Amino acid sequence: MDFKCRICGGNQFKRVTGRSTWEIRACLFCTNASTFPLPISDRQYNDHPFFKYSIKDAYRWRLAAAGLIRFITKSCSRGSLLDVGSGGGFVIEEALAAGFQAQGIDASHLAVIYARSRGLPVQEGYFQDSSFSQSTFDVIIMNHVLEHVTDPRGLLIKAYNLIRPGGCLCLGQTNYLGTVPRIFGSYWYGWVPSEHYTHFSLSGISYLLKNIGFQIKATKITTLFWDWQRITALSFQHWPGAFLNNLAAFITRIKFGFPFVGDQFNILASRN
Ligand SMILES: [Zn+2]
Image 1 (cartoon, rainbow, N blue to C red):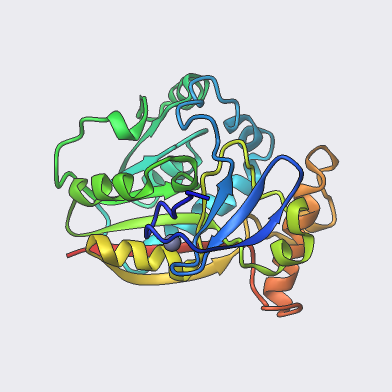
Image 2 (cartoon, rainbow, N blue to C red; image 1 turned 180 degrees about the vertical axis):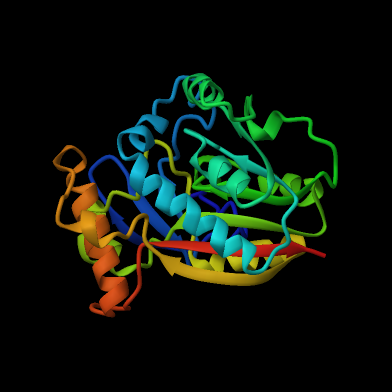
């Protein structure tokens, strides 16, 4: 089997979970995991309607975006900000409200039209192909982006070069080592084997960031959404995702289950 970890080059894996057509393999060295077989392409997002979920559930997406911006402002100074994969534009909106000069980039034509219709500055295209000047941004956010690309190291190096010395990178990732993925195995909503190449662990992505030259400033184990009012009003349209997310939030807050952790994490790193 000639299958190498795209993060560390390791070639020893253990099976985490899977179904008849796909499986998840964790690298024994760096602990990041890979989907096998790999998704067909990381350029499948031009007509992607993912942002429509955020419009249907705008209240919770705004809360999550505001939480992300608070996480950033605790450790990083305000300035110019780029949200990579900006979707419906909720993170840009919260960043503008917090005093950043914020803009976004997204490959989905539909998402860009929607965000622009709300007056938000968004460029259409893939971040990999973008031509921003070096050392332009004080903050770059990639919220659920890295798992979608064939070359996460290349994407992070590009981000590193676009961030000013002392500036910050903020990542939001699924945590496949969380309690809910461990309990539900292949039924966890976070695998998305047709789109996700890599499933990062907190220690695994820290290894990659440090290897590129970033310094880790803060980490936070979390869940996609958390809100007491809505926990009893599960969206049956997005069941079982909504149910599993609420269960993950419950486990994280109440410290119930093993290893007591949610199925998402945020990590903040700075460029030297
Ligand atoms: Zn590895």
